[in-house]
Image 1 (cartoon, rainbow, N blue to C red):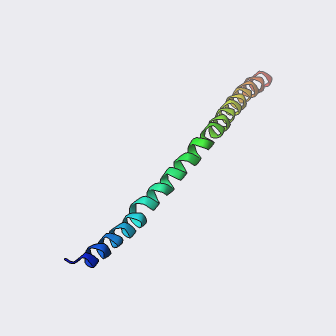
Image 2 (image 1 turned 90 degrees about the vertical axis):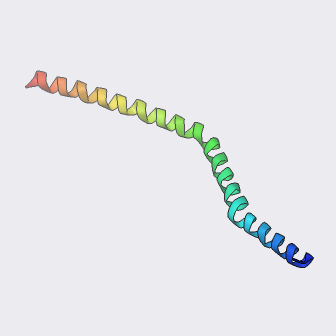
Image 3 (image 1 turned 180 degrees about the horizontal axis):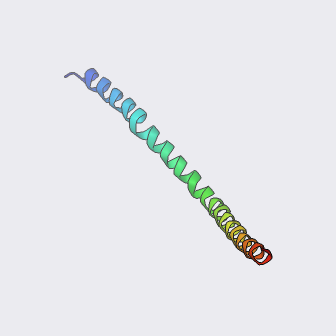
Length: 71
């Protein structure tokens, strides 16, 4: 194998490495950082939703008890 063939192979290898490994890995890292940044906000929203759900369920129980008393 001559020097130019080795250089061509190396260039092709580096191009494939960039396309198939480095770029997807960089995209994954970027997505992970987005999740890490947004996670606290999402957790606060989940907690608020859970609290509201519990309040609604408690009000439903009260309403059912009041309806039974009236009946």
